[in-house]
Amino acid sequence: MNIKACVILIFFISLGLKGEIVVDPGEMVAIKLSTCPEIKKEKVFLYTFNKTEYAVIPSPFSKNSRLIDSYCVPIKINKKDFGESRITILDESKVNLSAEDSQRAYKESQLIRSSLNSYSINIKPSLKFINPVNGIISSRYGKQRYINDQPRSPHLALDIAAAEGTKIIAPASGKVILVGDFFYSGNFLILDHGFGLISSYSHMSKVHVKTNDYLNQGDIIGEVGSTGRVTGPHLHWTIYLSKERINPESLLAENFEENLFN
Image 1 (tube, rainbow, N blue to C red):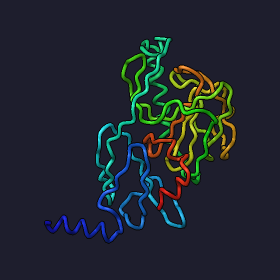
Image 2: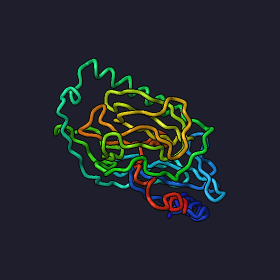
Image 3: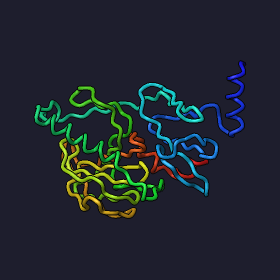
Image 4: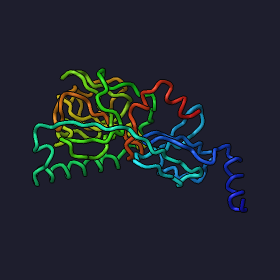
C-alpha cells in the first residue's frame, strides 16, 4: 500500500467511517458533520437527530452503479433492477405531443424547476412522514416506464391508486409553493418542507389549498383524481431532496428516521 492510500485509510478509520457507503438508488445517506467538516453547509440538507447534526445526502437514481466522491466518504450507488411498468394511454395526443402541447409542457417543467430552487430555510424539516392517501400502490419508484409500448423516463415517484375524491393529506408540515393545472400532472401542487426537502402531488380532482398556505402534518390538501395524463384515478407522489427525486416509500418505512441516523 502506498503512503497516500495508507493516509486515506487511516483518515476513514479515525473518523469511524467505512471506506465506502453502499446504497440503493433513491435512498438517503446521513453523514455526521463533526466527521466531515469540509461539507459546505449551504449546499446540503441539514438535520439534527439526538442533538447531533447530520448532512443528509440523496442517492440519485441511476440505471448503473456509480460513485459519488464529493464528500469525506465515497458513496457507491448500487445497480438495481426496479422492474418495468407498462401503461396504455388511449388519448394519443397525450403520448405524442403537438408542438403547442410540447411548448406548454416545457414551460410547466420550468415552473417546477424554479420551485425546486426556491425552498425555504425558515421551515424546520421533519423526516417523520405519514402516508398522504389511503389506497393501493399501483406503481413503485424506479420502474422503467413504457407508454403504449414506447420506452419513456423511469418512474421516479410512487403511484397510489384510490377512488376519485379520496382525501389527500400533507405527509409532513410545509408551505405550498406552487399550484396549477399542468399538461402531464393535471391538478398539481408542491409542498416545501424546508432546506431542500420538497414533495409534489399530481392528478388531483380538487385542490383545497393555495400558494403560500402553511400546512401542518395531516391537513387536507386535495382529493384523488384522474386529471392530466393518467389511466385512472390515483395520486402520483414525488419527493425531492436537494433536487434529486428519491423513493417516497423509504420515508414511510417503520423507524425510518432512527434507522437513517444509526
